[in-house]
Structures are given as structure tokens and as C-alpha cells.
Image (cartoon, rainbow, N blue to C red; front, side, top):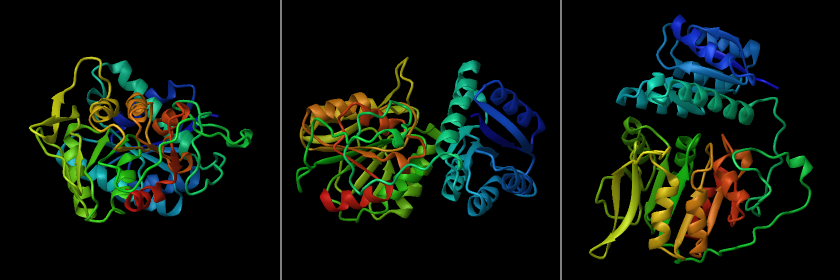
Length: 367
């Protein structure tokens, strides 16, 4: 069944452009468009689309207000289009707080310098959030607080839970012992801003170890996002800078558009921020960061993989697991897109799967 989309933007040209791109995908059906937030709220209630693409700045009613109203009355997967500016970053984060699940730059050139690749990515994101968040999609059966890993889940996709009756257990299990963990590293993508805020808000100011955060996000967004997290959490959060030391109770967010690794220098563990190399699709890349910490902290890491498209983090998580450290994954039911967690689960390297609401609490209790 095709994903049904409502396109919302005050620019007739942009509405037509987005509609043409989406309609070229046989798995997507643009059912209507709206030119302001008031129309969007009305048509969302009447048409019940699977996905709404929403502009931030519009006359009559802006996209953030419209998102808040839609989520209050007819929850729908909303993807924001925003400018890659500091103001655009703040507005986008406000929209995510209001209930939007994802965002893309409004200038397609900022998505990819390859026009066709940009179109492909737009369609992939719409399909992913549409399938995952569609109100007509069968609900996933609730899982227990700490579920066993499920290697039967296909990478980057979902699984028909009704057809899977036999319990599946991970072949490698690393027990997390109190005081053993020296570093927590978290990787995420689509749906990550809200997920990270949920997790970090549950940690006390006295959290005893450093935290490394890798979120797929443009460079113009990560500083604003780190400031947002710092203002809402008891722990300290900031965008990482080259040479920063790892400190207990401090979460360092990888800068967008670059890569972050951890290395030892003069007896200190510090972060290094480097430019991305050709062929590195994710900037920042979870695999690159995971790989660097796997070498420094064998047996004393805790890696957490949260909601996101694709499989970034799987290869690095394998190295972390080989070093004797545990891997946690967010469960399918609470993910915006069950791609990255599914990738590590399907690899058979996950020790615990749990709902998003339980992850921060478990970190506070077990680390």
C-alpha cells in the first residue's frame, strides 16, 4: 500500500516540486497539498494522511503551531523542511519538540549535490516514516521491560511480529556490572533528537561516566541541539570540540558535517574532530566513533543504538562486542524508524532491547 502524503508549503512552486518528486515513486501517493498551517490542520483531520511534509515559516499559521495542533488531535508522521541556519535549527528543534518526527533541508542542494540522490533520499525518508508511523499500520505487540535480542529482524526494515512465535536469544551476552563501565556511547539518526532528550533527561547530574553522542545532523544544527539538551538535562551537554577531555557527567555531541574519534594523549582521553573523507556517507558516522572507542575501552564500554534509518553503527558495535562490552538497542515499537537498532539486533550482538522510556532509567540504575 502506497504511503499517503499531504504536502504543506506557502510556495506554490515548492509544493509542485515536492509533489512531482514524491509522485515519481510508485510507493508514494500525494493526496493533497496546503498553503498554510490552518489548511494543513483541516486537511490532516479530513484526509488522515500517513505523512505530512511541513514548511516551518508560513502565513496565517506557521508550521510549528500546525504541527502541535495536528499532533494533539490527529497524530501523524510530520517531516519538516527547514533552512540550514541557526534560526532554522532552533525552529526545527521546536518542531521536533512539538511532535515532528524528521526534517530535511529545504534547499535540495543541501541534501546532496547530486540532484537525483537528493530526490531518492527524500522519497526514502518519506517512505520510512510513513510505514513506521502510519496509523493504519498494525501495532507491534508490547515487549517486556528488557527483551531478549532478536536476530531475525531484517536490516533496515521491520518484521511481522505475528509470524514470529519462537523466542530468539543472542548468542553472546555481556553482563553489565556496576562500576565496570567507563564510557557510554550512543548512536542515532531519524527520530534521534527527541530520543536523546528522553534518555538524557533521566540521568542525574552525578552520572559517574562520560557520554559520547553521535546524531546524524547538519553542522549548522548540532550546536543549537547541544544547547537545547544542556538546558533540559541535569548533566552537562555540549557540542564537542577538538581536544575536549572526557569527563564524568558530561555528554559530548559530535559536530555535524565532521567525524569524531576518541584517543589517548598524555594519559588523557580526548576527542579528535576531523573532516570527513570522500565516500563517508554519514557525517558524523556512528561506526567511526564506535570503532575508535572499541579500541580504547575493551570490556568497559556501554554502546546504545537508538532510532534511525540504515545500518550505521553495526560494524562499530561488532568491534565493541568483540572487546567484551554490552550493546543495548531501542525496541521496534518505540522507534520512529527501526533501521539502526534492527541492524545490530539482526547481527546477533545485542544484549538488551528496551523501550525508549526505559533506557535512561536503566543507564542511571546500572552504570
